[in-house]
Image 1 (tube, rainbow, N blue to C red):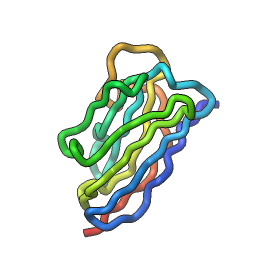
Image 2: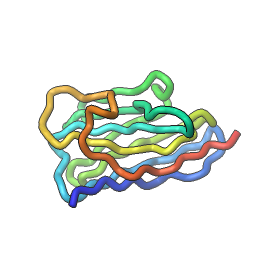
Image 3: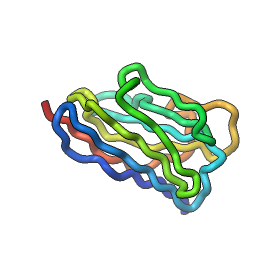
Image 4: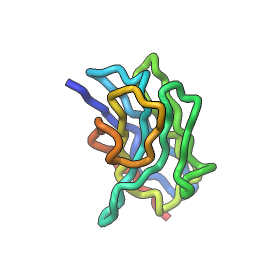
Length: 126
């Protein structure tokens, strides 16, 4: 059974940091791109960050550029999202998504991924 399990969310004050993890099981994602998305209440799921299979290329939404860092450890089948200088507008459920086939591109659209987790809540208080 394929599973992507996010962890590391929580409540933090503005300006604080969190590190999200997404541990995969049931499939090895080391050759596939992965991404982080978020969804706030009443809003559509939006792109946060993505990383290619090797970790050599990363992409960020303008709203998080310079504050968030995506990385991966293929030996652990895990992708991370380091979030610094958090703002109240970063409050959302954060989802890990992954493609399950080789691709040269690293998608920024949630619908372009094949597998996803249940999400982890991040709440930033002002």
